[in-house]
Length: 237
Length: 257
Ligand SMILES: Nc1ncnc2c1ncn2[C@@H]1O[C@H](COP(=O)(O)OP(=O)(O)OP(=O)(O)O)[C@@H](O)[C@H]1O
Ligand SMILES: [Mg+2]
Image 1 (cartoon, rainbow over the protein chains, first blue to last red):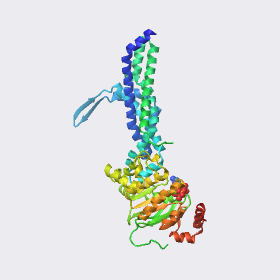
Image 2: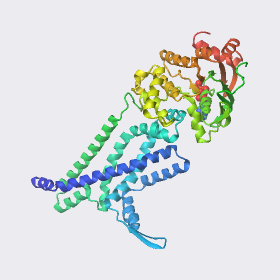
Image 3: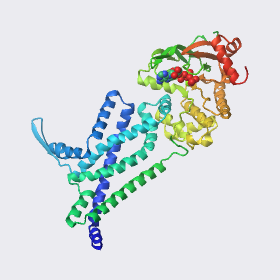
Image 4: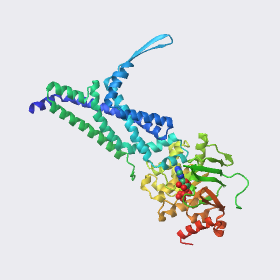
């Protein structure tokens, strides 16, 4: 017992760095999901039928395909194939090559997946607003884009925070999957060090605690944001 | 039908409005013209099509047929610019207020000044305060709609519409979502507007309004205007049977029949 604890303490900086990478991955993915999810939700609620259908397909794709499959597909498939491009421009050969880091690939795959889920959170929130809000905005001469930006979204985003909190904790758990790409995040570091020291219980318990702490921090943060943004006297049912 | 077939152009004229929704004819060839400073009162049973008609006028619900004239000029709402201009010139008050819940009272009034009229924030805020003063709510400028009573909400909604400096205001049962004791404060504001020469089209169940303020009452039922006339004529003669039955029912509710 004593020995296990000492081993864990010794490895703590290594593990904590992994926790930082995990938190960074989830944060990036949440942000990417937000940036894509909001316009997708607006498109789905106020866009034309083609746009709606396209977004619907996107959502179904990312809801239907396991993240693990997406990770392999994206990192070892797509990203690998386009990592070096050769093309011919005005008679001259160009070649570009770049390398996508496992971290970036993880953020992108988790972010694209989260966008699908987040778009549905925002869509629900937009639809839950009384129809009179948009009507009143239009009646004042606002363009729909202005009405969405200044009337619909500020209210819908507030209502979305509890859903986002949920999405955050799920995303955090899903982030353990990116260890398959070789990102040195919390899960892969734990696995590596647990195997090499044979202290499985001690290290996995530590990892579980750290995941739990990251969850709490994020959920608390969002809860605080919700309170800060709360409209006085307003209770939405 | 002696009134207002005057020369010169009406501030607003709706000609031949038709609308079907879900395979059902909601409006059937409804026309109305209103001159400057007049108040037209639409009255009729629930489901008659009053709200639909009012919302067709500013194309919140696009009518299937019908032309709208503003100061004698037909509006082409398929052109976006004309549609927005129309809505800027025609204010609307809703039965359930529809204030923007996330904005303060003052921001509710000023937002369209900034986002539609392109005023700078400072000027818009000042203008908003003037309008709030007019409806007696300047002291509540910094609270949120959820902190107001129904009557106060509706007065803010009126200030919000007035701030845009509309030529006509459409009012859809502005007092019917209010507790009885709050009706008076809103009615008073509307009465004041009428006295100030504001051009209005009002849908209501409140006979009191119709009697006191209407330049013309239009009785609507099943998507058509069945009868119209000055309040004195229509209420005295009672007009056709359907109209009379309806008025009598209303009067009974007010305890006068
Ligand atoms: N989207 C819709 N689809 C189908 N029918 C509709 C729709 N909107 C309204 N209606 C119908 O149109 C008719 C007229 O409705 P409207 O709200 O204009 O009546 P109203 O005169 O304002 O009634 P009230 O006094 O109750 O406000 C009603 O029978 C209503 O059921
Ligand atoms: Mg109505």
